[in-house]
Image (cartoon, rainbow, N blue to C red):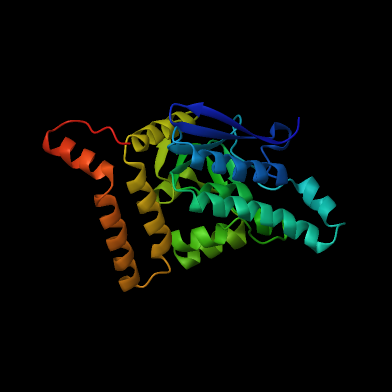
Length: 259
């Protein structure tokens, strides 16, 4: 069966399923391109307020297909570079996407699979899920922004250990470290992720988009730059129709229904 990215709808949530069962949901160029296209469709659809990324079956993703990587060694270096650019285009699309993206991880998230999960805004993992930056085990270095994400979430020494030693780290440990947002029973990561998505879907999309943009900018902004950005977002959101809906609902002790 060919590798593919399946798209289904659960209410206002688009679920994207990594499907490559013969190779443990390994990633590849077709999936990268489909991921970018799916986010473009979701961004322009008012019916989609969030996205959940999940792997088919009992595993999230084993990362790169080693048989494909071995074959790529016989190609010019630019050939592999183009493939990685495809992955990185998807990673950047996830980060720039103005709606919440949630990873739902069962089983293993390895290599680029781990990097992909880290690129999402929120991470839900089954208690038996394991994560591994497996690159150094096969004499490779990270891609997919894994080094960028982990270096902003964890101490340098721990990031170096994860990258260099290539050892597994449990969902429970990453939850304790603040990298995993929610833990779920084995087999329940998607259900928990969909529940989290539903709670976000009920909030004002413009406010969530502002929060995501502010969080993305915070790590490279000066304090004065971030304060200016917060000011501009706040004023813009205050004058959005949803602020009127939210404030009125709060004062009247009603449940708001945002546009």
